Image (tube, rainbow over all chains, first blue to last red; front, side, top):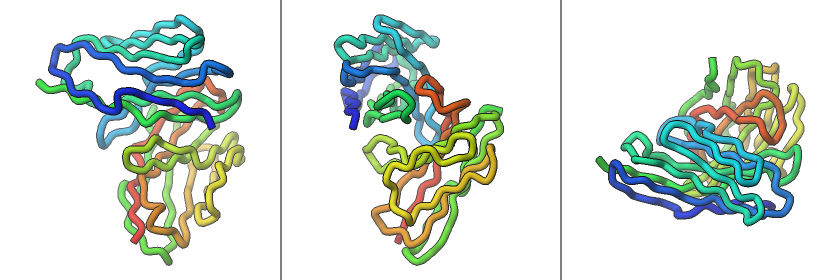
Length: 112
Length: 114
């Protein structure tokens, strides 16, 4: 089974801080990487889908990069706000045409 | 409407009960998924339906029985569950089954088996 790892498991920052966390996956047989944001008591919400090595995607203050050769993706949050507090999940399909394997997530807490 | 709804939000059941979880979407998506998520673990895929046909069953015990009556609805029938089946059950849908497809999740049903 595909092993998708995320670090750190949890993170606490102050409002205004910029932060980043990592998703690692096997670099062989890479197909795609998904990032989701999951706020407590809400539904997981899709952030990005990435496929190309060197790709960078941005949504407001959140951006993500992808390195398929070394098997990692970074998620960056610039100027964290309390509403950014959530668990951030990454996921990748094990094989073409199969469903996603999720990492355990990084839980971000932003204090005002 | 970009919402996936799930009912009930919470469910408590005994090991001899029969209950059903329901999931609904009206986005015209043709793929629907059931995931199970236990505390501090990632969501684990249980079933995938594509065009109303079961396409993936991740070796889930038969006490969980999925059903897709039409393209908008997905049910999960529960019978003779065990306490270790207590978890958050998430439903998701996507336009199609491709690996680049964004999945839209419901808020989940939190199940407690006594």
